[in-house]
Image (cartoon, rainbow, N blue to C red; front, side, top):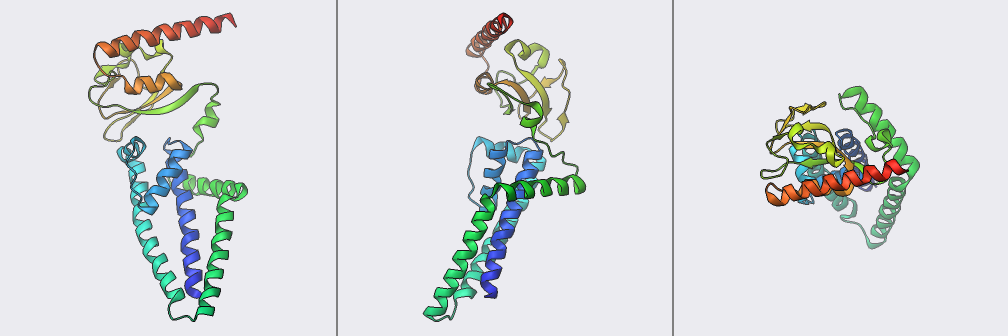
Length: 250
């Protein structure tokens, strides 16, 4: 019985740790669904390689959170396996059946609790208060604060060598003409520029926090230097001018 209880406790703690990590990642500006997926991936050691994973690794705070999750995940898996082995070792078939039933009921209860919106809200609020009290992370729901609507969104764009925006100043880029606003810049060394000016030069390996229409942000993220990039820039400006004209008629 003790071994089964230990196993259920490990699973419960894993759920709590994942929730804490999710809130911490969201506090750094990561979208909630991305933060939840990356936290689960790191804890279980799944090792998914995506552009989202690369953005997590590049950010110093996120990298520390993921590192702790990976360590705790390895310890938790070993502990869970040990508890399961001890729980069923040397049991008669009848006793083993009861152990399986107890484990199944316990896991069902944990799953129901983890899917409960009330429990999720309470746990998130508690986690946010703890992080606010004991860390310098600013836990905020960016989407809720900005009250985003329509196609407008806030995204993080990773700048790579050869990108259209790389090695150019914000004044030279003129992104506002495309309906895009740069809210902040995270340098490769982790420094954050919270109020970039026209003189701010965007460098390769920077991460940009940008606001604009989702489709236009995706196009900008894939825009490369050269004639094709210049053509895409002109098309984006013309589209934004048309949007502004349509809005003036409303």
